[in-house]
Length: 238
Image (spheres, rainbow, N blue to C red):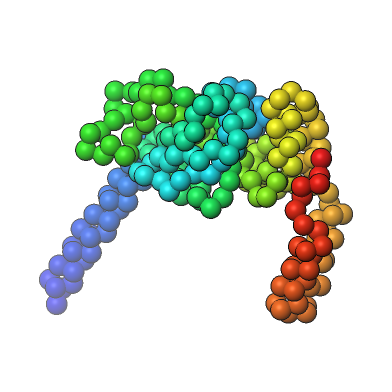
């Protein structure tokens, strides 16, 4: 009986040691491939270094890249219709393609790829690479993109927002205001003021949502439809 127990203990120790070793290897591998970069700043701080700034929607990704269907070119060459944008793979400091939806619109501040590192391309996986010279890359080391809903943009827009936070709490800012800043007709201070949360308004929104939920989903849907008919879009805002 003692020999059997010793054998079981020996098997357990070997299994446990193997599991720990595999865990350490996986952790080391992940750490080695992790992105490590200094925060370069909010959108308003990094956009001047971009080679192309566009408002548009990404097509479905292929590998770690997608083409952007441009609605408006805000800065940079206007003849580019569908720039290819390369995203995360390996240790490149870029966002994952899964962070973006082809059903949504974004403002992208893109940098042009002018050289490819020696290990940046593997012919066995041509759709997963550093990218091609002449294409563009999207960095995650700053506020290099904003999400756009209707005519409102949100993201790491102005100085003072938390570093590495791509979706900080803020009041969405009118896209026209962002464009005015890019054209030099609005200050970063005015952007910051527009993005500042109004505590009283947020509390009112919270109370209103709680009040409406008390009437059930049907009432909420009907009220939303009525408000949409009465208020329309934000097209009349400056």
